[in-house]
Length: 182
Image (cartoon, rainbow, N blue to C red; front, side):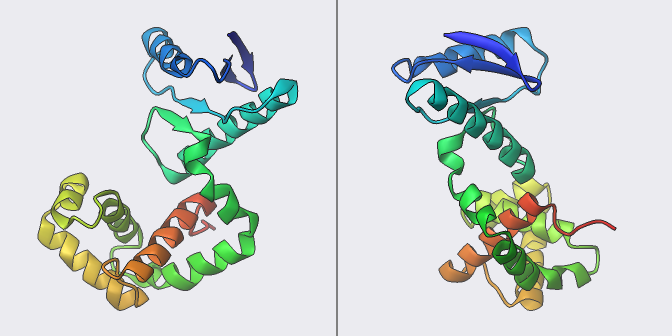
């Protein structure tokens, strides 16, 4: 194993044949550093160029996790492969986000509580009670917010196709830092 510092990141290079190395590295990071550290894991690639590719994937995974507001300690690039794909066609994801979510900007109380509600619903797999617990509001408040979202956007998280569109738009909004601040 090789441990080094690069671009302000603590980097650990381990062979793919040692899958337990990530857990061991994470354990030592947690034991020696203050809370708030995260571990980014790139995919396995061959040779010296593969080490560089894996490092870039791990660093990008950490950036994506920050943009998506993920709270996990170990971020695996393999788990986030869809997001670079979405961002490759920036104009398409911007169009999706603006087309689907722009009506939320007109909501009384702002768009953020509605976006947070959608994120909680998606994280809770549609369970409104679990989403309410996450948000620290009543289930009735979640139901009310979801109805506002349906009325404003025309999309419902209960419909599978519309749910996918809404979830992709919300994730895209987080990745893009939408809405832009003036």
